[in-house]
Amino acid sequence: MLYRIARAILRALYVLLYRLEARGIENIPREGPVVLCSNHRSLQDPITLGVWVPRKVHYMAKEELFRIPLFGPLIRAVGAFPVKRGGVSKEAIRTAITLLQGGNVMGIFPEGTRNESVGMGKRGAVTMAVRAKAIVVPVALVGQYRIFRKMVAVYGAPIDLTPYAEQGTTESMEEATELIMSRIREMMSTGRPAS
Image 1 (cartoon, one colour):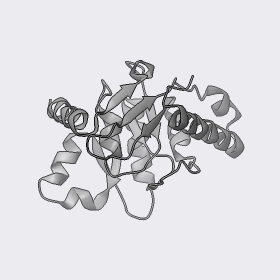
Image 2: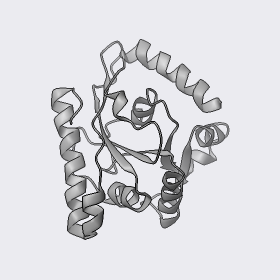
Image 3: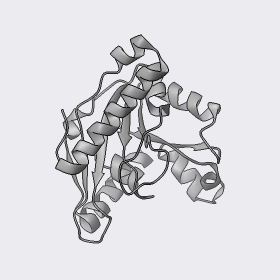
Image 4: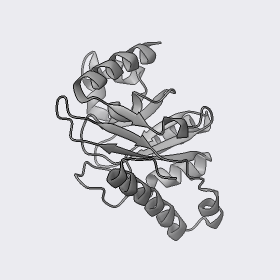
């Protein structure tokens, strides 16, 4: 309930402030495990990624944020869980995989850090998706978060990782990661969902 209320308020604010528009939202499966893989430019990206998604989106967030009075419990209530500073811990990966195996949605930024242009992705998102048998939906967040300037969240066609999972090699995981990142780059340049 809290998540739905927060999402509705944030959606209204982002539409008002950034003229946020979603394209390709129908590409997100209505049920089953889904990993939303997005480019990452701003601290606001998790909100932009999730406000139009009709399902609850879970995220990893820095452990320090959960120690802030009121804010910590709030972000936990809206789907975030802690990850230790200095990299993603095995515990955080297990939590993500468990959430996905429960049929949930995870929002992940494969680059691992904020970048102005779409850089190289890390294999973690693909590894989690493969282990949980999740569908990956590439997402491009297009715009600069300038007041009254348009922001667009573009959701591409789902990517089935089964062929890469069947190979099960480091190389196949890297190929799958590069496929996802190339779809994100394509959507960044066109502003339209990749198929």
